[in-house]
Length: 220
Image (cartoon, rainbow, N blue to C red; front, side):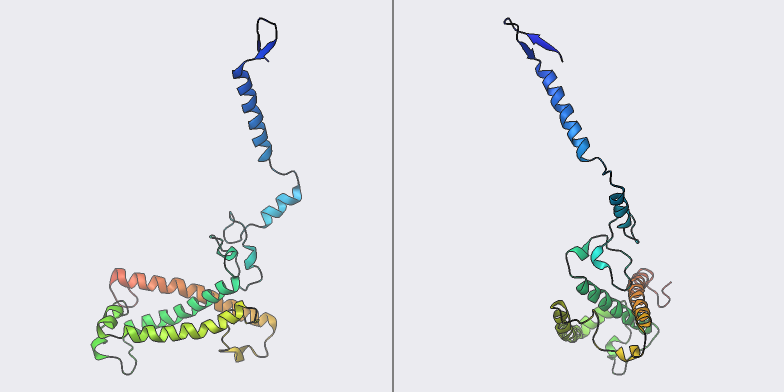
């Protein structure tokens, strides 16, 4: 260590030398703080906790045990909301999109329900919104949607309070599960969630394509 001497022969460290030592000490401390752990089991555990769907992201632990779980939660939403509520929303949107895709295509193929307003008969699925607004039908639609939402929330609220209700269970179609084994029931649930996810993508695609190409089914 370099030093200078005053007239009374006492060594005085140079300020620059002291600064260099301080920087080196800080760098050494930072390196030690970020050094990898030497425990091999910890490294293995971290590697095992990666998501199957997005391998460079952590596995969402709160989603474990749910049918159809692939570890896909890139925004970590399951850490902030109950997973039962998220699964309820996924099933609800998926079921609606299955009906919506079928209805969207059926209308563009010419299907009309009895009593369909003559003023809207020429509307396609893509232009039905504006036609319904002009005809005054949107208010009725919103009322029925509000009634369905309020009614369904009773079951969702009870589920979140620990009633034991499964997400998406409204007692509709459960007779088809009678007499089936647990493995068969799990298979049916997996089929439903897969169809729900596919329907959400399919409905988004069919709406986008019909608007971009302005043609009827198959929209190209």
